[in-house]
Image (cartoon, rainbow, N blue to C red; front, side, top):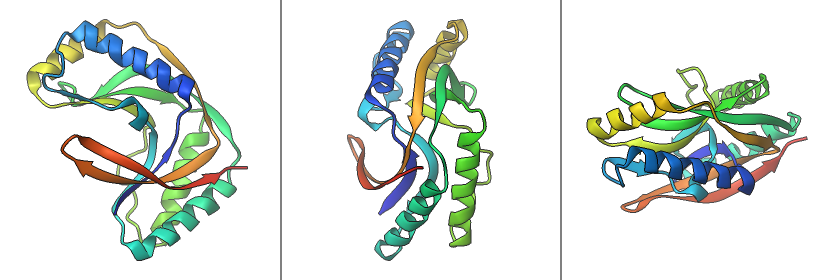
Length: 186
């Protein structure tokens, strides 16, 4: 099964992100043309994308995630500002302001998974919440202009108190996520 490890966000943050996404959609006036908005219930903070995981490996992945979670204290991060990857934008996101705890958690998790044979991430980790994926250049340019005109915005605090392993099933209607395990932090 296709898997990733993530931090869930609470309903209050999810609601504020939904409002922000609606504002961006209205400002861009593109409708759904060329943009695939992430369903609000699917927004999460990805720490590690594993890709295909054999059934025999799921228990080990869940154990590594539980051990990592158990070795870290709970903490909070601020979700703030809207940015993008690519020029014109290909992905639009809400950034995560991290005092260092999130980066330490992700690095520890990545290292433990590497010790178990999973490839390490080659790119530096930048915590973010994906709002949409842009499918064509015109939509990217329009959305890029909207982002440049926006004032900084805070979505609020996200409390990091557990790590989740999710499976991801790709369907024509979009990805369907299912919780495999949740491991609480100290």
